[in-house]
Image (cartoon, rainbow, N blue to C red; front, side, top):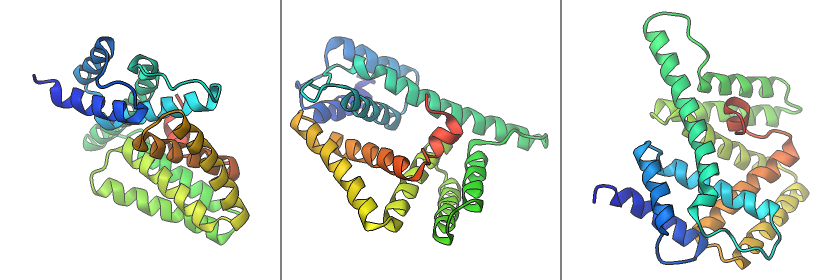
Length: 226
């Protein structure tokens, strides 16, 4: 069947993530087929599911089981797809207007570079300024290699997180590590698989660094949080 590769990849990731069942339920298969028909990239689906898991763990009772149906995660995948489309649409508009030699709106990458430049300009230390300058260079490199704007911003957010951790004081790193370890251990006790635990760790690390640094990330700054 033509839809099997896409369906199989979503099914494999989701079943491995929540460790429940051997295959998707019939209504979940319909959800996946809708995503495929609309061209939702697999990476977007995975990010949406990972966000849904993280949000559930944040707001639920520690004994509550992780929802086993994709229908619960649909809202998060749709929000992730909206960000993806917004970034791609802005980029296409920017490229088309630039090709016609008209004044173009600022594209998402340019917006992100502007955010990084402002952060570098008001940095509290030379090391902090270099962090944002290095992130800008990283973002430019991704775009030059053909990475799409949404994925480039997401990857640069990870770069900023790791740069912050590398420069943070030992007590700050220990505080972040303890927060992440507590959340990952709790998720593991609720039956999440290794891939899902990695996503939980990534999301919680981002949240912890945002709390320490006061910077929520480029995706939030440029594309919004919903």
